[in-house]
Image 1 (cartoon, rainbow, N blue to C red):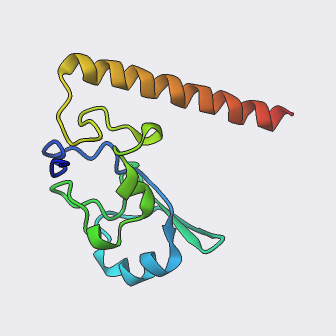
Image 2: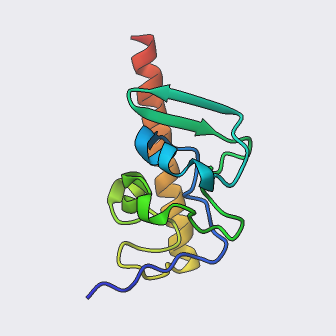
Length: 124
């Protein structure tokens, strides 16, 4: 049996600026929690950007204002290898400090490799 997911209190590290399906964004526009400095629409998705880099629907207590309507990336975060949470494993168990550091290094390596791939694609 999988334990109920328990995020660290006041942790919103996974709640960055992301794209939302336009219908979801418009339905929840009244629940926006922080100022948007730029809002782009592309291919049926809205990309709202905030100055602090935190999701527009992330509340002051770090909870999601649109939790039932949250995008798939939010639903998957921490549960698949490509979207690891450094603090909680896929079963919802808190990682030890040593495992947190190791997981953060792994995530940073993966992100760096992906950035290099993107940069190479731009050059080619």
